[in-house]
Image 1 (cartoon, rainbow, N blue to C red):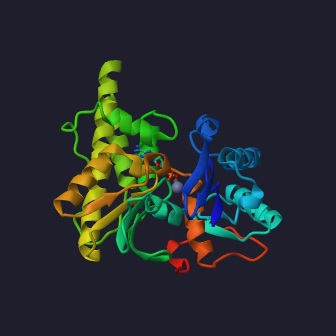
Image 2: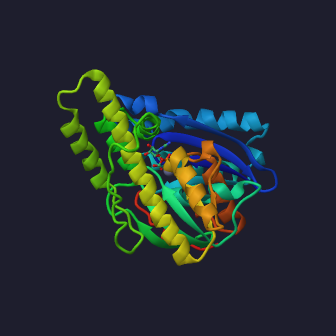
Image 3: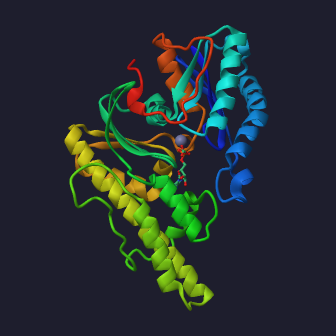
Amino acid sequence: MRVLGIETSCDETGVALYDGEQGLLAHAVYSQVALHADYGGVVPELASRDHVRKLAPMVRQLLEQAGLSGSDIDGVAYTAGPGLAGALLVGAAFGRSLATAWGVPAIGVHHMEGHLLAPLFEAEHPDFPFVALLVSGGHTQLVRVEGIGRYHLLGESVDDAAGEAFDKTAKLLGLGYPGGPALAALAEQGDPDRFRFPRPMTDRPGLDFSFSGLKTFALTTWQQEGAGLDAAARECLRADIARAFEDAVVDTLLIKCRRALELAEVNDLVLAGGVSANRRLRAAMDAMTAARGARAWYPRPELCTDNGAMIAYAGWERLRAGQHEGPGFDIRPRWSMTELDAV
Ligand code: KG4
Ligand code: ZN
């Protein structure tokens, strides 16, 4: 079975072809970052309009690249939520229309399920059950994964998501949008011993997170220490704050993941979502799991952030199990992963 996947939940247009026998045939991602940069964040209406412009040419090019035509496709999967309503509508309407035109089934996929399953279509991959840490711009969740669609939420952020905290802190340090990768790069030049930021909610039991205080901590440090400094000293201060912030986020995620592995009594930890691209996070998780005789798994680097491949794969898993939608379509801008049907 060959599935076309479409991702348009936020500011990336992603398309991909997944084949049950041959794996990922082709995929392409177009990032709207430049479009939104001037506004310091994603402008939903601009995002929707750009998905409209990009989707059809991208799917055409994808099919060409794979040497296939519409008649070779057995199903269409699109992101149905969570995400920006207008952006989701573009992908859902387009995906549903293609499926109707081609006479094949369609399915709406949960964006976070896509992230969660992304490491599974590599040749070497973890088996169920495992613990997953989902760290993106919109979500920070720890999930015990029993199988596809069988997700037990162990903990989540009570305020900002980890990626959101990276982006907001980067913005207040003047690093532009999206700030996560820029902040991580700046942190490399920072002194790890100058500041120690708190590790929120680690001194009490439980697996929930809170990241909004760290952003405030960064702002206060920036204001208090930055007054009267020359340009060079300000630059050093900025890097030192970036490093202290990154260390605090990484350490907090690490403590909770270790706890989750103990609680769930499993040895495999999957990290997915944009923040799982963070180098220091990976190094810390690798060391922590290795020390326990466990293992951390990641999607391949280009599939950590939003993409169509993860949607094609998640859709393929569900379509091949016989799940699909009726002739209409629905989007779910807010949608909990625990509501999904098991496969
Ligand atoms: O999964 P994703 O592409 O989109 C959402 O579904 O949200 O995640 C994007 C998030 C952004 O907040 C971005 O700043 C963050 O992932 N991110 C990073 C890094 N690369 C992306 N955060 C920290 N370090 C990175 N290297
Ligand atoms: Zn995402």
